[in-house]
Image (cartoon, rainbow, N blue to C red):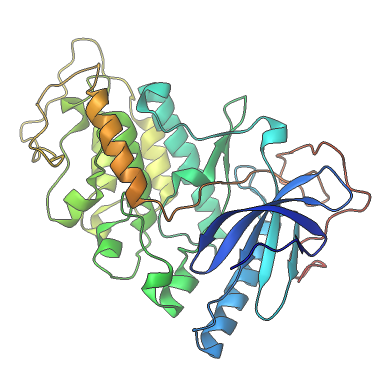
Length: 358
């Protein structure tokens, strides 16, 4: 798939990522300094015509739902259009001009309380997507950006959504190897609590500092080691909330993302000095590939092992998007989060399909 010179009224500068269902491009509005990212849907030619048509309809429907979403934590597209054959695209303003930074990946970059707070905000953003009929089935950390004031912004990008997974071959929307729920790793359909598990798996990794996600462990019928065995800053109530979200049985997890967010908010994120967090019956120790973690291990964590494991995890997750995108320029339908372009276009950008787009 060669790099196009332009898509619609946008000059393409580079191809950032190519995936089975499309590609992510970086470019600018022609005749302007306005920097954008372009998510282009390119259905595989090998797909039957009916499957391609369903995929295009799902992409357009999600674009319209995103445009109308009144949620400040979720980035909305600023333009859309169609190209040759079944190609479609959504345009998002780039975040750099507004001072947004990617979600930190180093567990040491945030306190225990801050990681729990971020997870709660992420759950609320994803819950807003679910309410709008947009249903990603697993959490991708690359989709989160943080403002200079610490606000969370989620960019809905990628292909792991209910309409796509149910109607197309699973090879076109594979589960994330680190954060997917046991049902997805087993090749089953997602459940309403699959995304809750995915966020909890990410939070577990951030609070433990371990290279291995609990996803594969739970899928094998094991339970993760209590977090207070690994990080003494984690309280029993916070660990209980995360362990419930990581339950292998979808029916035993939280009923909704908002319920998990409220549990994280209500939990004491940091253990009281001198308090014992150990329950009467601890769960099985988490295996990190070389043996059980040492019970009671406290900070500083084993960062050398964590860094080596992270490199392996990065290779496994190489298919994930390398770039995520935030906030559109203010418009009559603004979601309240503003990215100010270096130079505004001479004409307003079109909304997605249904509002002057496709």
